[in-house]
Length: 452
Image (cartoon, rainbow, N blue to C red; front, side, top):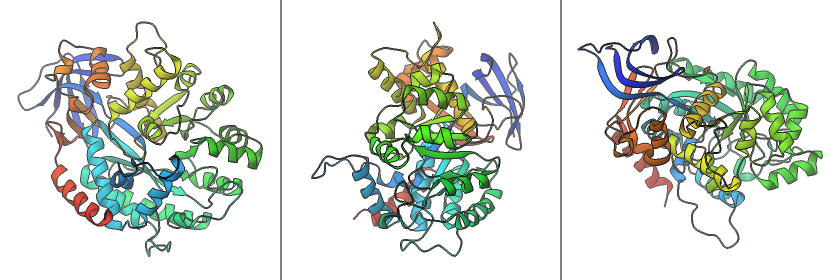
């Protein structure tokens, strides 16, 4: 393929000008700075490394906005969950593929180039396993193949309704496995990924309320050296139930009973004490933050400022896909900290440092590590996952260097994303995914049967 040439790009060592990038087999094979463009090169203005979306439930894109009508009592996460259960009771395999593909198109159009799919919907509507235990995992892989996004599939182990091994509720029947069944699911899930360049896999015990300690040990053993993701301390009721069961808070229990390390990603961790926040940072685990969903569900606000001060690593995810956008997640993350701290520029801890640059680079590192792909960035040997911004956008008028990131995150958002390449393949041009209309048509067809 032709080389890619950019007027300016954000490299690990900082901003550089006149960058020429060679790509082969999906990777950056050479990167020159301060060089000349060749006649056959494809040109862009501003290049950034693509970000990892470390936590997504793709099928939930189909129910975005359906839970915004007040019920007869106070609405909360648990009432939202009941609507979600009713929605998935209708989902067919083709619906999972269609809704997930729409989510992936929107992710790519907003600057994500890899997704960690926290995949807990495994069985048919009756709760019976499909003949192929990875039927729905294959549908997710097909959505990734069709859209071009890099996929880290995170099959979820879910066995119980609450702490102490409580029997699952009727609405959870499509999730449930025992450890042996999950081992078969994990093995079957590897097959479609083998045909998908750049794909990876991890394991995901759903939450401490959905697994017993013995099951958590068994699932962790299956992970070997793979990433491990888990929901933890998202809701205050979850914290209260954990204390009633164990005498400890969820993050406290996890850190005391499991070898949590840099392979772990703790999703949400919304409700933590100062000591838990410090210990979580010291463990090397990544905090998987989904600020827009956490705000939409009324979860609360993670102490990202304390976590970063303690040396913690974080990444961002779109979770329920209520609103998909990389810049928007980072903006919500910083603004929530400002509201709780009554301060500005909270998540950069060095004087005269751009908040946009600090947010972007932290999410790049943390997301890449959480999904098992290294540290991310535009370097030789890395995947050719590149996002270009529109230098002619009004939000970038007069901007250069870190001010570009500040403008993208705090002013322009998704409208600034011009082109996207994943593994060197161009999938977005002029802000629009190449398969957007085809994917949208399938999405609309599915929604016509799901929403009646």
